[in-house]
Length: 333
Image 1 (tube, rainbow, N blue to C red):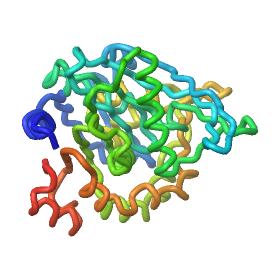
Image 2 (tube, rainbow, N blue to C red):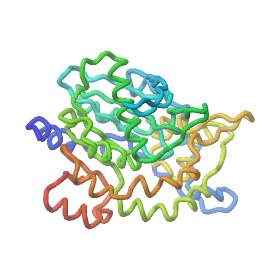
Image 3 (cartoon, rainbow, N blue to C red):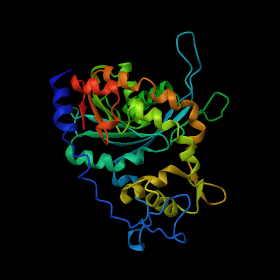
Image 4 (tube, rainbow, N blue to C red):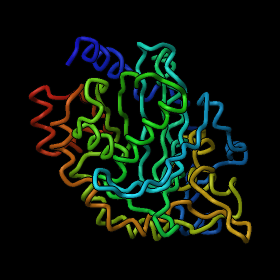
């Protein structure tokens, strides 16, 4: 690893304050009365003065929004078939050719806007850095199969190849002669994708390192056992975007009201009846869940480049990661 990469990972990424920059969430009082509680969302109820403000626009957090077209290409004896795609990304370009580009990949059921506040705080600490926040297929990006149907293959290999394509298409769109030096950052499923990408070594010397937020293989695999039960507790639709934002806060699905206002609208689509439904039906993705996280710990430790793992507590480290931490193979916060 180059001296620049070591310096960047240790002095820049690791120095970012994990909590302080975000505006503190007001303390909500629990209301235990049956009349005011919601059966599917718990009992955390904001007062009228704490209820969400209108949704916030993406331009408050990123400089540009792109819909990147990938044309369909037929299979030949030398190349594999390529399906038609329209990828959705947000970009704030690096300030110079020497500045790094942080590539952000969201988790399952989330979107690029789920990382908008994170992107803004990173820019406060690294004002010259660029930010590319991407959206996976079935999460804001669309990929079509040969027969014209929507291709929602969410296997880890497919999602990783989509990430590489979004990087290449962004490079072509903005006219970069070469990619900037890159730091991959992924939350939850996104952490699995960036770890898989780092192991492919496709970015070669352009990859400075990668950061994984709030996910490790062991706890992720354990959580999958209860995922369908959790999904069954969520409302299927909302009467308005404001109601959806409020539900995320009341249920403590999101603890930061500002984050809810920024991200929740991007998670929903309007139905013909005028209600708002989930953009991504997570219950239908179950076939891919184990594929996302199996082997993630060994891949995280084995990839090239500086490594950062950001978790809520050390009790979430599995044995392989604990040994790796003691051996100094990655930075842990």
